[in-house]
Amino acid sequence: MPDSPRLQRKGPKPRAGIVHLGPGAFFRAFNAVYTDQAMAAAGGDWGIIAVSLRSPTARAQLLPQDGVYTTVTASETAPDSAIIGSIVDVMAAQTDTDRTAIIDAMADPAIKIISLTITEKGYGHDPATGGIDRQHPDIAADLENPNRPASAVGLIVAALQVRQKTGAGPVTLLSCDNLPANGAVLRSVVLDYARAVNSPDLADWIAAHVTFPATMVDRITPATTAADIAQLAETAGYYDPGCVMHEAFRQWVIEDDFACGRPAWDQVGAQLVASVEPFEMMKLRCLNGTHSTLAYLGYLAGFETIADCVADADFAALCERLWADEITPVVPQPDGEDLNSYCAALMNRYRDPAIRHRTWQIAMDGSQKLPQRILGTIADNLAAGRVPAGLCMAVAGWMKYVGGVDENGAAIDVRDPMAGVLKQTSDAASDKVAALLGIEEVFGKALPKHVGFCAAVAQAYDKLDSLGAHGAVRDYLRS
Ligand code: CS2
Image: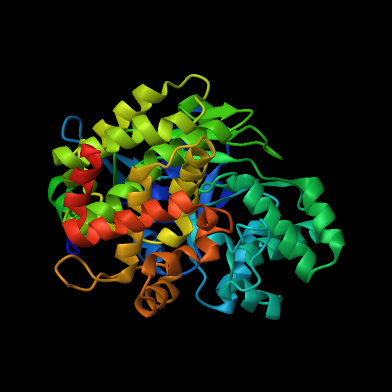
């Protein structure tokens, strides 16, 4: 409770070596924890300056407690908690002065890594070309006004320009978002933007001095609620509005390509590998693919959380069937992993009722998530001569969801950068499926030309109408 004492830092404060953009719950439950543990294990000046590009909330939560906060491992069987001290400062881009200070922080020679968890939509990239999307509102605004950038890529390139001028030295840009080839995406938008607003000279400097390792990140971290904060105050005796709840499981696979060192993350469980791609494909398709499927179909069927979904025998069977028949056949097995055990472990992770991960939270930003989570898997099945009916039903579930009306006729609060376009498209067309399939930003050019795919999505959409989401899932399981 706000009248309980505030959490305090105990012990020395590390010196900063990392600037992190996107200080939300996931970063606090993941990156900051690994870094805290790596410094405890092997030392190093790897304190983190956490930067929020949008809201001042993280700063308000964390600064009064000097960046320190609590992580709670929510688990039925093994609950646990820890105090994390790796965040040494918190900034928020609210004013031009803030933004200048953020650029200066990233340009400081002491900073060796700039890492990011800014979500799929934060990169301002065009998935078709891999370069920057000049229509993206934040990118368009920065290109118009390059001396006062506000987007992630705009601020980063401004800082790299200062580093080039001042000889601040090389730096690693580390994307930790759920995007395929996240390092390459970041490299491509940074170079493209640098060429667009500065002399090509800067792009050459970046290509020579900055590395962009790929990563696969995994830890289920539901948004912290007021009840979580109150519960912690009751059990721990202090008020920590910056606390985060997460599952026990974690996995971080990182391409070992750092320009000037890194924390000893490998000593605390991170896997440093030559190629992240097979791990990322396994995670995006097996975990995030079924997460999004459960999010849309589960929400429509009236389930509040993932644990509620898979407590239902039909929805649990849906996941099993998707993994066995539609997903793992098109996922190469990464070294040291066994796909069947990976999926069995996923089901246990989903089942834990202590993790209250809302279907509504996962359903957000579907237009940015569908391609890498579901559509690529569908395309690979089609290429192998199969129409994956379950994943097509997931796409139909997303279409119903973005139509904005649930099965009881109530409005759905759809959060998506394309929410307006999606709703208008759905509302205006009599053939809603065909109209939505025509949105190239989501479906690309090739998939909507596949007759079998379009027919399967249309059929699933009709079943969602006539049988409801739960009925459609049962129908699929009988097929
Ligand atoms: C989830 C992910 O919200 C979502 O879209 O699918 O945040 C998921 O929990 C993480 O990727 C797990 O590592």
